[in-house]
Image (cartoon, rainbow, N blue to C red; front, side, top):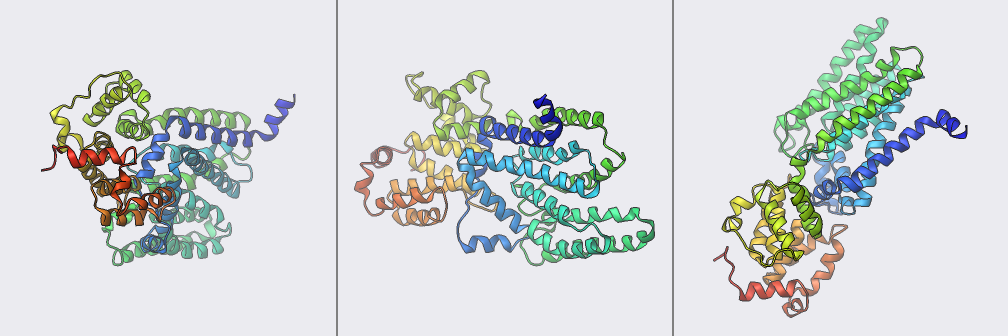
Length: 457
């Protein structure tokens, strides 16, 4: 009886807790490599210049906050917690928006944005700026006044300010104000105000194109929302916004909540999540990313098991699997296929460039590892890579380029998770004899000084 009473009285909170547990387990145990991949694709710096650089671009606050959060993905436990908070926050804010418009809303509708956000994050080409901007916009919509005139006034202020802080997702404010068209007494005045909001939104985008060095098309799609600035972002933003502002009216179709509809909706949401979310995390899209993270962490047994379950498709993954067998003692000699030494064959994507840098580094090809790390970092969208920058600093120390290494170390000292390593590595500057005592750098320095590098002449 106590269990039944608990479910009846607190079933909404139990659903929230269930969502949080499912999201945390998903990220911590099933897709930690997706978080580590995002972390190594940026370099968050703790200085004023970095902040001002982000604020100088539309959507800068959302991008700055997202990059601030992503740096913690270095620790997958904290990363899984951050991902969970984003997903749960979107659900709670949507629930707040539903209650704002309807005194007795259908609670299952509040899970729609959370499920879609969970699915959306699976696309590695989309940066975390978009999910963060979506959550911030849900908060803004939930805070807008319920009365007509105050809502319009706040909307007029929110669009230019929100565009510079969140990006084009602030257009949801326009969609939100469509609700006033249902009032017959003020319908025509509402049309006029909506036209003003649309014009103001377009002026913000067109005006910013004169201030920042980004194409107009990318400003409609969102600067920093995606690696490639894809056109589909426009559809994602506006269709999702339309769905979100329409959900309160879907809930309002029924005058009172029905338990059968409520629980049927919850079942439909769960089934929809089970079907939709895996499509955002397709194994083929994540193969190189997963192999790269396992190689970075030295998980040789996991690499071997994965390669035995499914044969790798790319050359970089094939090399990684063979190298793992050699490291695990299952292969007596590490034989190199001539094609593996061809950068055009091995480095044909960002994950493969990172893998190549790691493989060449461990095999003693210091210069080739340096080149691959540089290629991987330069392919990062409007940022640098903390992992690649560390590798460049390591290779510069090994090859005796102390001035170059010092420059890289100075940058890493302004980060959170690479600072300690950078500070410790300064002891090697100007003291190459100290490298000889390092278990890794000493061995690689001997290879560099006394062995022939087949890829550089």
